[in-house]
Amino acid sequence: MDRMPAGPTTPTLRTSVERTTRPLLLRLHALPRAVVPLATIALIAVGVLAPPAVGLVALAVVGIFVAWIAYLSWPVVPASGRVLRVVMLGLVVGLGLSRL
Image 1 (tube, helix red, strand yellow):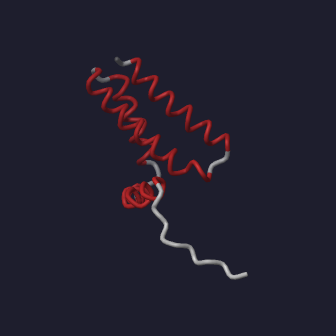
Image 2 (cartoon, helix red, strand yellow):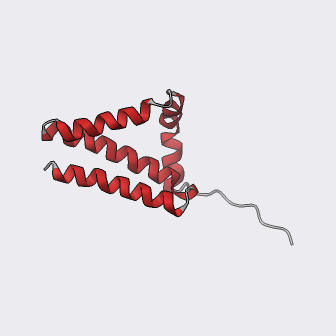
Image 3 (spheres, rainbow, N blue to C red):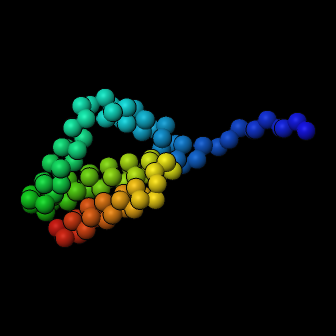
C-alpha cells in the first residue's frame, strides 16, 4: 500500500520556539563552558543580595533562562532530569517571592 505524502504541517509551539531561539542557543554554546553557570550564580547572588527591585529583575532573568532550557530539553531528558528542572524553577520562583 502506498503511503500518502505528508501535507504541509503547521509549526508547533515547540518548533517555533526552537527555530526562534536557535541563534541564542548557538551563541551560548560557543561561550566557554564556565560562563553560563557562573553568570547564573552571579545573577542569583544579585537576586538575593541586591535591593528588591534589582533582585527581582535578576531572578526573573534566571527564571526565564531555566524555564527556556527546561522547555527545550524536556523531551530528551529522563524523569529525574525533569524533576530537577522543575525543582530548580521552583527554587528561583520561591526566591523571587521571598524578595517581595
